[in-house]
Length: 448
Image (cartoon, rainbow, N blue to C red; front, side, top):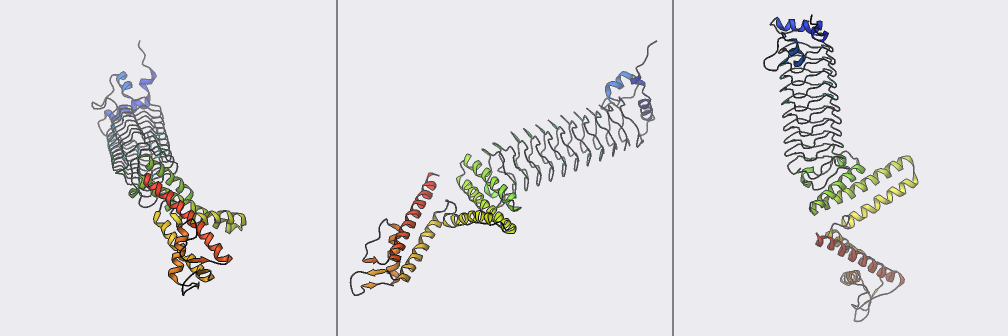
């Protein structure tokens, strides 16, 4: 006599089939279905088991299986449309090919579960535990995964249009070639997530942590990355020109050939806004190198100056900390760096401003003219006014010509006295330095 394998006469499966055969929606909260093999293949082997005509698996539409135990069970191909599995424990359970449209799996523990190829529009997985779960090729438009734990989950090639991942924890999650248009990923932890080839048109990633994420070949038209942490992220050759990037963070990001503009940043990167000046300097460096790579020299100049300013702010921050510790050596070291950077910024805006150098020229001409007047060391050689001159025109003329020529000017005025001659030599040296600096900055501007 033929014997039926124990797998096919498992009492708990038989009981579940009897409930389904009764023709009323299954209402069995807390049901124990652990290790039950109720997939479409197993049902076909049973022969007489009722099979859902739409999915080819169990007919569980509208069922209440909340808090059920279903670890390592097989529900592949099941019809669970609008079913409730809230709080269920289904680690490593198979739902491959199942229908889960509008089903509620909120707060369920489904770590390592297999959801490959499911049809699950508007499915609720809020606050569910889905570490290492597999969602390859799933159709999950407008799914709710807010607050879910998704570390290591795989959504490769899934359709996640309009899905809500707000506040989800998704370290190392794979979204390769997934469709995430208009998806909500705001304030999510997406560290080291893989978005290679994904479509994120008009998606919201505002405030998300994307450190180390990969966006190679991704489409980000109109995406919102405001306040996002893109540190150490691969953003090579992407078009971010239509994205919102206000106060995003870029320290250590891989930016090369990436299309974006200064105006998109809202005036500052996120690190600067939070007073993290050292990372802010690295962020501006990454932006500077990127804008150089696409020939946007004005933007690169802006990033360079902001980066240098962050270095000065960081030095000032360190000097204040040294002061609080009563660290004399630290105060001198960081204080000198702050002072030197502040002077260079005032003088020429870190080598980027011709107007500031011209301003320094004019100011020093006036200062030295005043010093010549104080010392009384400029002598008129001939005429009725022979002797020391205090005429502002004489003082300014001599100072201006001395500043801009290698030798003291011959205009009927002669410096006398050690102090005055020292001032003449000092002004001449300063003039040579400023002329050289002006030529250097002008040359850089012309080359651009």
